[in-house]
Image (cartoon, rainbow over all chains, first blue to last red; front, side):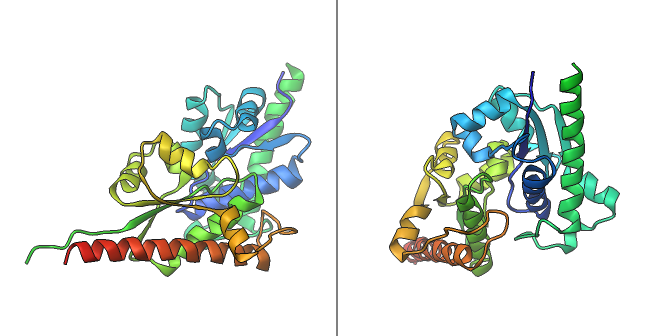
Length: 137
Length: 142
């Protein structure tokens, strides 16, 4: 039974959505879910076959955090024989929250920024659902 | 008059998430893009590992500089795995040692002065390499 969540952001660098997704994963990992229940999946390390990152996608529930429709996190996880159990689309969360990402800087957003918080809360929500299902199953 | 072909340098930073140094590399890449907007094409590790054709094309089209954060040297691993030729490589530990910069006590979620100072040093190292590659190309076409 899987007992932890691997937060797997796409880790793009060109768009503000990718920055928001990355920061949201930190917030979800460090505060909302906690390091006791979640791991941060690093795309470059997973590609490079770093064992820790391979273990995350094999042993945890994987939540992909995608900044666009190309779904790079999913592509990589599946290439490494893992499975994505839930996906959070940054653009969709921001649209629902009424946040226009185009006005935000791509370089950095603090963890208490509303865009980061909105995405992190959605990441935590789907993660809790997965963990709850695991306990029930 | 014939059109001069566009020449740029592609930059790939590891841009990971687990380690503090990956945040430093990410900020360095943004500094490079800001300081050399006409000469640089930023290529994300995410799109490359996600097999996005346009990202792969950009990384193949231009000389590629990779910036590696931690010991597995993931940016180099991505370039090698995707058959991208590396024109120059920068390793953060080398830059930190050369400039005697420490990032101890910094936070991976938000860099302070020490983290940004290392990012600046990395960016400057990369820019020197970019300027050299661009100059070599310009000389070769005269």
